[in-house]
Amino acid sequence: MPQNSHVKLFIPGPVEVRPEILAAQTIPMIGHRSSEYAALQGRIMPKLRPLFGTAGRVFVVAASGSGLQEAAARNCVRRRCLCLVNGAFSERWQEIVVANGKQADVLETAWDVAIRPEQVDERLRTGDYDAVTVVYNETSTGLLNPVPEIAAVVKKYSDVMLLVDTVSMAGGVEIRADEWGLDVCLTSSQKALALPPGLALCSVSDAAMARAAAVPDRGWYFDFLQYEKYAAKNHTPATPAISLMHALDVQLDAITAEGWAARFARHQRLMQMVHAWVLANGFAFYAEEGYRSPTVTTVRNTRKIDVGALNTYLRQRGMVISNGYGNLKGETFRIAHMGDTTEQEVAELLAAMTEFLGGK
Ligand code: PLP
Image 1 (cartoon, helix red, strand yellow):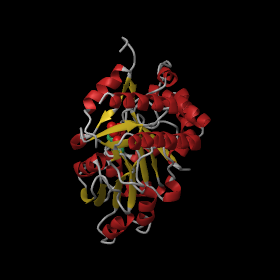
Image 2 (tube, protein in one colour):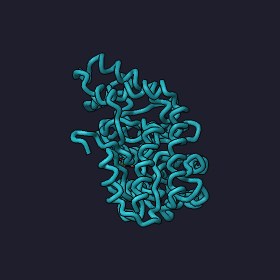
Image 3 (cartoon, helix red, strand yellow):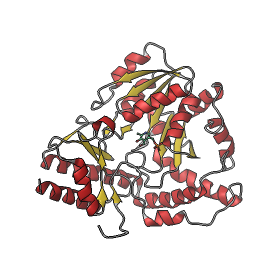
């Protein structure tokens, strides 16, 4: 590998960030209580609404996505939560709910299978729950859960908040939070938004705000009521990540210029390219058919290739993919195709992977 050359990331976060976005972070510092900062936050907010498909409030927090998983638990679980689990990140969210002093039960399926709305209905019928957590796109397994259908079920239970982790898909797949009735949608900056890590973003429904107002012990840093109070002046309770806000501002202009629909369509095309490669090269998919992620493909390593050796080969060519997550290491590998990644970049990656296999 030539010295100082950058290794292009095809891992499911952090993803590649374009130089223009990295440069936006070098804009000189401003005071966070200044009118300039309020103007920055004020121009970001309307541009962010299409990310979640909401006409309502969006909060941006200096944290990673896990912070807002904690926030959703603290603000929106009154007593007992039903955690839908079919991957590492949904499993961790359940741990986070419990770590915040709330009771949580698990509805778990095999990790290569999507959660079905009927299963959720059956559990909610017990009347035991006032919130549901679901991970829309399981980054560990490359599986997209049927959130619109799950939301249609949850809607029947007016007292139940639907909390949705959209971390590895928001910005790559359309979300319609208002139309589907998603109470909280949370995401991180370092995935399909193609920003550096450090920002967590969420949409919050009126019902979720009303729930928060009725729930004690919300803590301080992640209190939705505090966010709302300060957002009225385009400020945040604590010091915001100002440089990242500049990057977000510039990136939202670029996304708006690309067009949200065009961006989602590009993600579909990238997924199809990767799917075609998987099939042409005798591999299989980890996630069941019909629920495969448009942002990350988890490949079943049916040919038992040495994933470490593949990555060494790719690194020498300035690229890197991801091994399987946790127990799935070696048995699977993951190719991310999200953010600002182009067809040409994915084609180059797939060509190098084919070359590696040619030597096998
Ligand atoms: N949820 C999902 C689906 C993720 O993929 C991740 C991280 O990869 C997280 C939550 C945690 O997000 P963060 O690392 O931004 O805290």
